[in-house]
Amino acid sequence: MALVPRVFLTAEQIQNRVREMGAQISADYPEGPLYLISILKGAFIFMADLSRHIKTPSRIEFMGISSYGRGKTSSGEVKVTKDLDVSIEGHHVLIVEDIVDSGVTLTYLMNLLEQRRPKSLAIATLLDKPEKRLRPVHVAYVGFQIPDEFVVGYGLDFAEDYRNLGDICVLSED
Ligand code: IMP
Ligand code: MG
Image (cartoon, rainbow, N blue to C red):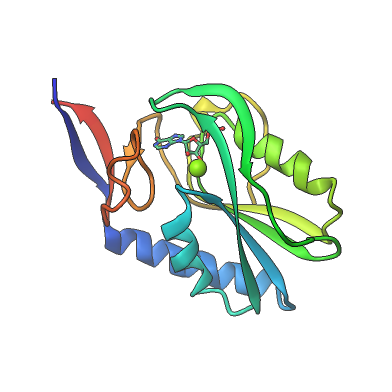
């Protein structure tokens, strides 16, 4: 059976929402520097778009975390594959994530970054699948709440494919 991507959120819908999120974040953080920490690779496009709608002087950082294998389900095991090379102590930090699913990845990351004593620590995610949550995690900024479907595009992958789609698509069997 072939996997077919079907459009779920258009590039235009995404852009409109990302612009709103940027305005909200700009209002909530009047003073910089704001450290935007994005999780590779899934959040790279969201980071690029969101950061350009944030008026607060910002610094762009990336971390690598792996919790998924090559398939659609979490392995449950989280590890840092690329750490920050700057200190976040005393700074406002916003984690920029593509999607919150079980919450395992972000719970781990929040605990890890909290230990580094930032001035504040919050999460912005483009997508949220609340039905799949295993760990409670407070997400300050959510682009879209979506049902429990596997989605790809706009940075999100299935086994490293589909990241370059402009729309967000549901991957379903034909
Ligand atoms: P969590 O630890 O289960 O919350 O997993 C979050 C990570 O799993 C995300 O950052 C994505 O990399 C990946 N993920 C979860 N759901 C999807 C999906 O529907 N499509 C693509 N990746 C997903
Ligand atoms: Mg991710």
